[in-house]
Image 1 (cartoon, rainbow, N blue to C red):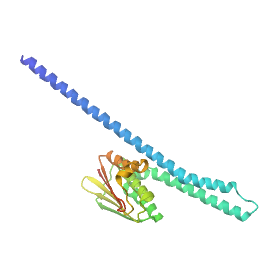
Image 2 (cartoon, rainbow, N blue to C red):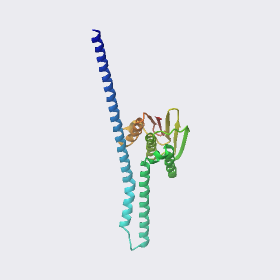
Image 3 (tube, one colour):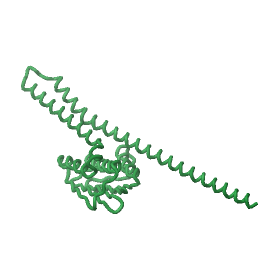
Image 4 (cartoon, helix red, strand yellow):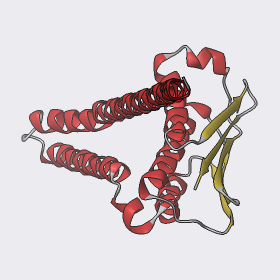
Length: 242
């Protein structure tokens, strides 16, 4: 009887242990599936962004250049020269725009030089455009994280600036990075027109952008908080553990 009792206990324990392992494997599989789904969604958003940039900017510039060259008036050399100069300028602008898109998508800068240098280059380009005053500050002791994690932080900040440039009509923007004990805190704040979060979440494009930020942070157990209201600016607060 004692032997039977012990064998029964061992059998039930083994059965419970197997069920526990099975649950862990299922959770692991679900996590990997959700992670892959999130990555594919963000990839699709990136492709859509590239498509819009090419269609809205580069395609227009090249179309105008082609139109100028197709309508050259050789009977009026001065006018023809002006058209050629205009076409060259438009083609040059298209090349620069393509180069900017390529650089913004490249991970080499993050991998080779880290988040801080990549941000400094991005901020330099924004300041050159003189769209708004930009206050940039870093506090705490800089921690060099995994390149993929730093890339995610960089992409979130890029997305935030992209939204500010396109929609906010801000005159002042603050970007701050605070390296604390076990995580980094990123703040992007503007004094623009703001928005109703519930309304924006219902729109496909803008809502996807905000959702993308949150999904990117979640990939590394981070959080994203977005506070905004009409005519009161927007504040995006991100925390990601080292």
